[in-house]
Amino acid sequence: MRLRNIPGSREAIAASEFVISEEIMRDQKGHWDTVFMHAQPLYLEIGMGKGRFIMEMAAKYPDRNFIGIEKYSSVLIRALEKRQQQEDLTNLLFLRMEAEDLTDVFAPGEVAGIYLNFSDPWPKDRHAKRRLPGREFLARYDEILTPDGRVEFKTDNRELFDFALEEARISGWQLEGCTYDLHADEEMVRGNIMTEYEERFSSKGNPICKMIISRSKGV
Ligand code: SAH
Image (cartoon, rainbow, N blue to C red; front, side, top):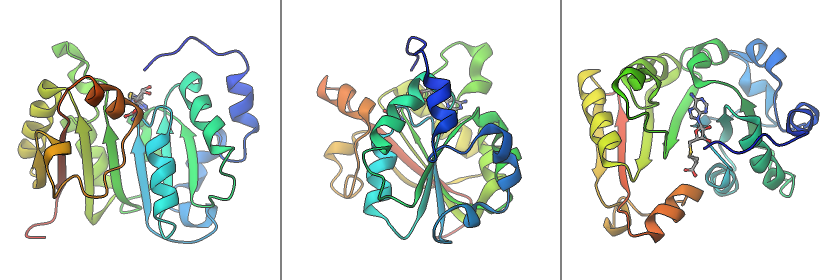
């Protein structure tokens, strides 16, 4: 998602108590527990866009901490506007960062779960390394996740989804759950929180695919 540059968004983000600045986020590596009100399992959404999913997750699961990661200020500012209306949430922070740098910001085993929702498809072969469910990113997730940590990925893009399944297989991850039509899958849709993209694409009639992967055997 790319919006026009929004004047003042960088300044608003820098001034917000809900966004950890680029200067200090690397210093929190291994210490994210101390940044939140409560020390509890940490979950990330990578490429959160306008932030509805992670805001609803944070409200639904007060016993977990959440960090929403987004690389563009012009998009993050939209999430921040929503966040400011829910100041009582003490378990939700945002980072404006490029996900390639995840291992600089999170220590091994520091993250309990990762959500990828409607990640950019990067359809050209030469851009495959930029796809968030691709093998280069799976190796980064592998480093920062707890041993039983999971990655959950939703998309309406069948090509990207098939690519993600294959990348997970090649990288030795276990498939814990998989559906090609989430909203029709009684079991997997339970507790589903819709993202902005999910609402937009499913209202056009596109089926939503979802997979859950882990590295632990026989969960
Ligand atoms: N998850 C939201 C937005 C999906 S659009 C939803 O489902 O509604 C994908 C978002 O991921 C965009 O906002 C884009 O800027 C962000 N993004 C893509 N690649 C990224 C990366 N490498 N690091 C951080 N954010 C990224």
